[in-house]
Image 1 (cartoon, rainbow, N blue to C red):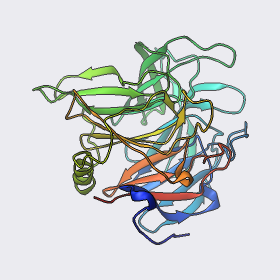
Image 2 (image 1 turned 30 degrees about the vertical axis):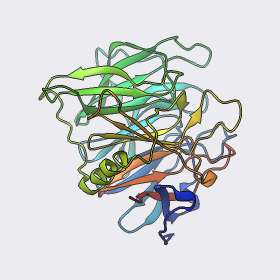
Image 3 (image 1 turned 90 degrees about the vertical axis):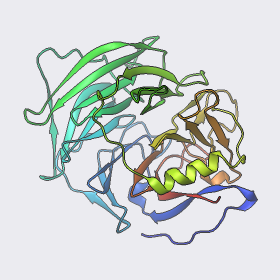
Image 4 (image 1 turned 60 degrees about the vertical axis):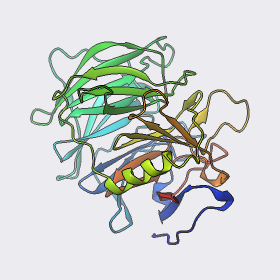
Length: 349
């Protein structure tokens, strides 16, 4: 169901999330939301904050038509706290996550042309994590992901994070992990592949949050020409964000101890929203907007608070499409009630 209306928020805020669609099928948290061929694929998640058994349904949101449908694909796996990435313009690969009884490192793939879920198999030489949840998967190329997170089973969790390269082969329906190193112990963080500072335009992978550290951690660096991934082009939103960080309306402050927030790269900016504070005893669900400006390595953070408690979210997703940033799902202020809305970020500058 479409939701109309756009107006400046109360309290003098320079931004808000404007609802554009609402449907009970969207109500979930700790799901994945991935854009593929102009449609958003929502996989799994938890229906309520108290739930322990993840959903096994797949829902498709068409942002152009503002329509929501449940996909009747066979073999949809129950998952939450996983991540997903598009491959070959056809497959949606779901990596790791919680299936209701254990943490996984396996790969399940939705063939969007055939409408069927496939369980891909490990290739020879595969060296998988012990189990992954609340991790991140970042595309380096069409068939290569960088996986970052703290691995382990139900009873054991490593005290450090791990970095893996995950190669995906849709031709053979196989995958292969290779461990590339360790990071600080993080869970519920987000990752962003951004231009590296300096005279040569390489790339670096940054991890934000998921632990008490305030600053992002650089966990990968690639020289110019190594990364073939092309980010979505969003010229209007990029221009708006540039005006926002130059408007002196925000404070020069980064998030302190945040997890289960969202993160999207828009041009040279990393946009973080919401999440759960690790430093507060009460009122832990957040509704703050943070912008990390990769053009300003000396003072990159900008914080834009929000007075609307109805926008508090954790376990949600943001997706960039058609020059607009979408907010999908997540749990609200009570940490239990899932949002059934899709919203667009509106900036008032």
